[in-house]
Amino acid sequence: MNEAGKNSYADCDHRTGNVGSAIALGLKNKGHAVTLGARDPEATKVTALGLETGAGVALPAEATATADVVILALSLGLRQTAR
Image (tube, rainbow, N blue to C red; front, top):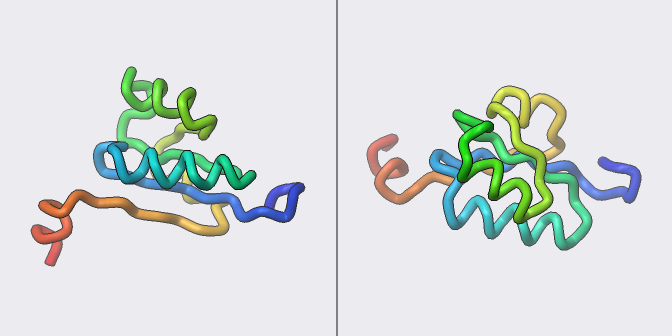
């Protein structure tokens, strides 16, 4: 938990897409610490999303290392492929 007694979240989204960004923004608006896990944390889209949501950005292993909660957002196509 962070200083405000809120959980820290790592949101790992395969493509750092709409679902992950909505979750990150909602959690940040409630005062939670959020780190987006991305395969390429320096990609323009990912850094822009970090700035837009106020979330940190890191590789998935780094994002999840100290998180209290990890949210994995996958597209429907990937979810079906993983079955």
